[in-house]
Amino acid sequence: MKFAMIGAGAMGLRYGILLQEAGNDVTFIDTWQPHIDKIREQGGVYVMRDHKDRHLTKIKLETPETFDGHPDMFIFFAKQMQLQDYLDRCEHFFHKDQYAFTCMNGMGHIEKLQNYFADDKIIGGTALIATVLPGPGEVDFMGKRGAGKMNMCPLNEKPDKMCKALFNELQKADMNPTLTDDFTGTLMTKVIFNSVINTICTMFELPMGEFGNFPGAYQMGRQLIDEAYDICARAGIKLVSSRDEEMAALDHNTRIDMPLHYPSMYQDMTKDRPTEVDYINGYIAELGRKYHYEASTHLFVTQAVHLAEFHRQNL
Ligand code: NAD
Image (cartoon, rainbow, N blue to C red):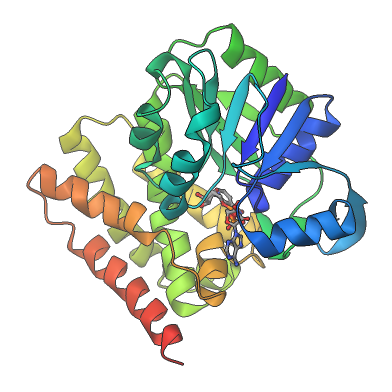
């Protein structure tokens, strides 16, 4: 298949390079100038796995202004607050026959994609795959090949030929995809998962295992999970996991799977970039408001992360 990655950051590079290695034609499109300059100067991207085996991988890199290809599918991996700028700058090469796929965290991106792509051409998903961009021109794929897993679902919940072809390519690339049948439930289950780990580890600057091993972790997580699940019940959103399954997944992910990993929200804050908290806990609180439910813990946590950002800006 022919792909264009919109956003060649940590996840864009991981998905794009693994799809390229699986035999696909992949072009990367990015706007961060120091990253673009470094990749051009080096003749590619330095790829590592768990800080080891650093090697140069050649990629085709363009900017929104220089790209003029016609891929079958665009894969969006920007941060939520960058997406509109990417869409504005890339709009000139979007066509009606093309698909948009994304596993971005948070909520708000699908509505934006709907302004450019037809509903039957949008595929959403979630990725439990940790990847770090240590600096311009370098990416670290955390975990062994085949580590992590992901869910995907077309917006109209009717997988067509192109969706199945994407699924096959992701399988060949060892991304461990699962095709689910409930679009909103799939995405919201991950938003809720992130609303606990990403935000708490970011506020307190903790690796995930330190939160998981804290004796009060269950109580803190459960309060956020209960509020979010109550809201989804009011909104008629069918989540993929039960409350207990979500708690067990949080425990496993923090203590067993990735104890040393800092979530991507933490990485943004420590690089003085804005976090996606408004699209995660903030989104849950906003949804609550719509259904007359005061999500006081999510509201508090949203502001607490903003306070942590504010504090760093004033250092
Ligand atoms: P990223 O920040 O690595 O890259 C996104 C964009 O930001 C790219 O265009 C990149 O070039 C640019 N960028 C990176 N560092 C920058 C800097 N210091 N200044 C300016 N621009 C910079 O983002 P990502 O980790 O690839 O995440 C993309 C989406 O995937 C997000 O919604 C994220 O929450 C989600 N996600 C990330 C991970 C992960 O482990 N990284 C896992 C699952 C989901």
